[in-house]
Image (cartoon, rainbow, N blue to C red; front, side):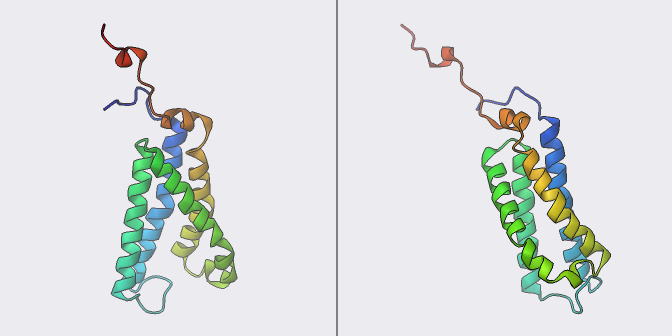
Length: 145
């Protein structure tokens, strides 16, 4: 297996951090709601809590893999970000609840600002160069005569 010779560019590092922040805030929101301290009147049912926990865990894994240089992961991150942005209009329909709880407000702002910025960072030219697979040298492919 060929390892990357280049160190992870700062733009990727900061992009991944920008992607982790909304996920961390979403996890805190899930935890506070499950404990009855969040913005919901009653804690969510166990099934919904588990569903969101698993969803957040999968998202964390994908961001982690993107931070490790996996091209498939940054493509999945881009798709998830597009789905999130597609739901922005629906979220705005519930504008009165957008900031009904300080943690919910921070989570929403982080999701709709930091997530797109972090995703864009993963596709900047410095990041693209790092995500490209290393090209095997011609010597490795030569046939001994």
